[in-house]
Image 1 (cartoon, helix red, strand yellow):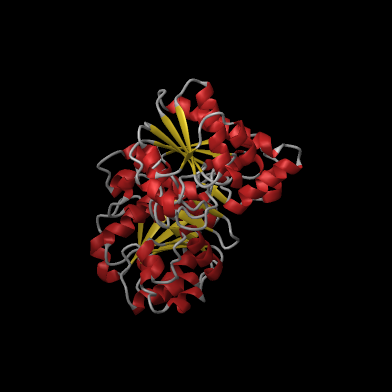
Image 2 (image 1 turned 120 degrees about the vertical axis):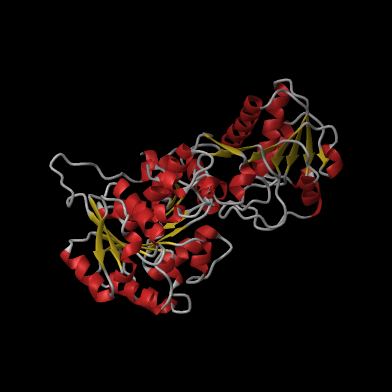
Length: 470
């Protein structure tokens, strides 16, 4: 299945994959040999022959480094190796491969970097649970040449992408079997440079037992709604976007909902603001909505299949009442921007009114007004989804979409040009348009985030929000 290639394995899950591979008959020695060979091969593909220094740690990551050093030397590269700690302390396959290394083993110090044109960082893998210290920290801080990281740059947490202390900036990271969340979450994703995932002999079947719940976002995880030959506009779904004080935000969202496939989109606007919407796009239907009861009536009479409220809505008690009124309809709903911010200090009122077919799309500031923000972004989004019973799309350069059942995706392809006013309104519009066509909140959030990023990549530099929709 294509989605299995998008699976992200946490540190514990990857250890289990190794163990399951060994249980199935794959020798652990073979796994290390394949990993080190892959590092050497990818290094040879990416760089011209040069003076290489391998920084080897005291565990299996260091063992991979010994194997990579052996292959590069066999291919004629000038290779030196510096070890953190004593060779007598190495165990298992790492000790075995240290014994196979025929060159000198230098102590790991910043001075070992002298004369090196390229560093292979095989100090620590993704499971390091403490900041780098001592000679490891001093050596990493002194690196001034390109770095190839084995598994993940030392100091980057595999489960979160967080760095406590220091970590090297890698030009290339070679990892094994599947990526980890730390390869996709910031700042780890940036520190990894280009990531190459290599096959080291772990059977894909181990994923059936591990049952991963986190994935790198992409079409293999969801399917966009298909047009039906006998379809009509109502069969394609009717999305309702609630407009407010900032008419541009809700108009962008409405147009995005139409472009993402909703058969019909209605903008519900207060009578006092109707003139602000007079020049709305002709294909968007305008209806007056002055109160929660008006909204309830619109939803019932117009056969609304999904609701978006928040873009340009405004803050205050009236906005809270409108949001709560919309939620009472029980239909698929996207809560964005002001629909979240207006509940700052009233979070329980909102959370107690949420139901399963809801997607919340906060940026970092909006998220913190309602939920505790843990240092780990993935854990934060998952906790908020579990607490609220709604899916959560936590925006940013590493957007995370989390479901109440624990599933999560990380969007990795969205460019920094999306940091522009109105792009979040377009994202919310994409999501409600997809939900109007029957996608679940979680899948609609994931698909919308991917489409949003792909549109931005096509638009190129100088992007403004209006460029995303066509």
